[in-house]
Length: 455
Ligand code: 4AD
Image (cartoon, rainbow, N blue to C red):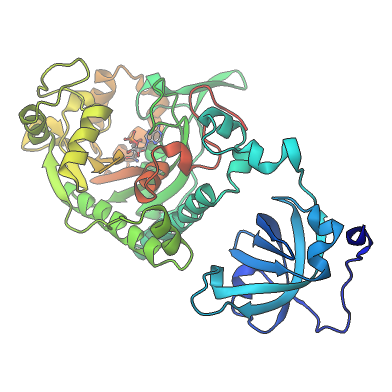
């Protein structure tokens, strides 16, 4: 009853509370501030209520005592309620741990949106150990948890880092279309749709468009969604993923491998140096070791020998032979056993795309590369591109593609061709490796894969 009577009011004689994001409040010891956010944790210790407040920039431990702690309004608070807390930032005593090393001594607060308690409480909605598919239905709530939100922060830092490296290399960012009428990586994974009565697809890769930009802009890159109607339900395949792609001109295959290596080494370094993402990365993947240059370089034909020696079989359970595709399981076994990043090069023509340039010293194979990382396998695919129209036409023929829709791509060879090459990185694959996630589904905001297009 007494608790009902307590009125929560601001004491106007206190210094004015300055509005502050949580990460800024860490630096405001001794000052009165007001912080807005969501109740991340809530604990009551008889006369004291402890709240961990979250606002996306950080967490802050807040203490409600005296009348504030026993008021009915406080007893009704629940996880995920949004509140505005007013109070003085104090340093936590030596030896005590708290985010930012501070605590907020709350003197007044407002409730913005009370979240349900009981049956419909937040914790019941995302119960630990729940079926992954139920958790995906509740993705909008799961995102608020510490793990996925940390992955998203690292993701943002990774994209910043990648852009920074590309900018250092004087490359220009472009935004190719998502709605296209050409394939890049095989017809079987195309998502088709009706485009005002014409057949069109969601892009599988922006590569062909990037190639057309070289003569206009020089080296280019894009960060764009790619779409693949993957039939297989694996932990590293999404139907929609964020594709980081780059295309460079007047370089040779060895230069291209160096560009890829430099990008991976530098962008990981920048993420680790990032004041927000660095510590989160450490938290998610305490044993992470940044990749070191130079990467191991392994030719496809030697990989086949390695697989044979280690009695790793192909998808049909047969001994590997030259020309076989090294599918996911075998690739991962090999990468995990070797245990370091690998640039796997020179794949046979038949198992690669129509546009890949053949090696001058061995026309059975192409100037192609996959980057393989322990725990996830392939994170990057790239190649030198055919730069002569004639050879390209042969490629179309081999793959049974009608070149008509590709006239603009062919023109790139016709009007001042040049040696060029590029690569694509799967953002979610790199993140799975960086953040030590079992599946790429953890590394994108709202994963799309066979059978899932919601929320
Ligand atoms: O090896 P891919 O198919 O290569 C291309 O698309 C080239 N045209 C890129 C280029 O040279 N510009 O795909 C490149 C990368 C893969 O290494 C992988 O990391 C990622 O894209 N990837 C996927 N990620 C998630 N889900 C899928 N279904 C993916 N398919 C490819």
